Length: 262
Ligand SMILES: [Mg+2]
Image (cartoon, rainbow, N blue to C red; front, side, top):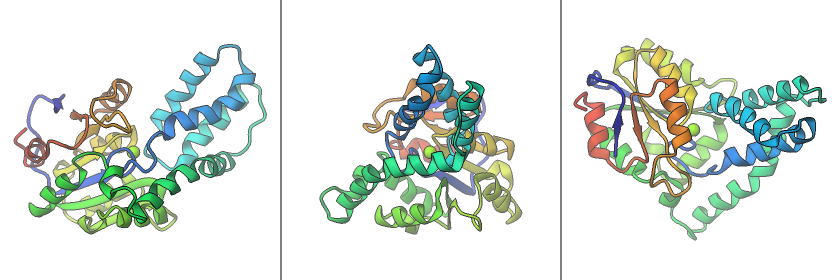
């Protein structure tokens, strides 16, 4: 239900930062295998062991999860060059990836828009109940993502969770990155140890730990979201996660974490 990695309970939270994709929303579920498939089209012909090449790519893709996609693609371009290949720019690879995956994301969102599927079917189980419970307790809630700001705002609205947040920050020149948002929260008077972060990526876990906060790693097995994904769990623990959960269904336990009782 909830795996605790830390030995003592955390300080009570005053502000909570949520990552979007894979933490609250399933709009982009399946993005990692799709990204690795695309990378392998270029990497495959440059080496002899496709399994090892894919595993090597997975390391930097996982390490940079939570940041703007261009960082993963810059690492990929570097990998291509190391293998003697001719690489395009990280931005070009990112655009190509977005082009390829846009259709599945758009059709999922359209199905919600038309009422063919429920908004909750594109949320990690328990997401809405947890946001509601945290909000009721008067905590400040923030949404932060490495995905384009415009897309995050549109999708949060469509999924009916926009109203829970005191601020939404996707990737844009005038927005905050996750570490900038944490600095902003601290500057507004909330001490780092009173910040709780929920995330499925290494980046949000690492920057929150650096700020002195508490972290819940959402290691959900997309898209069913019933059990812990062993690989994600390993990456999140490695990044310093204090707790690991398979989904957000146990709001009572997660509220205990937020209140410093778990
Ligand atoms: Mg994520």
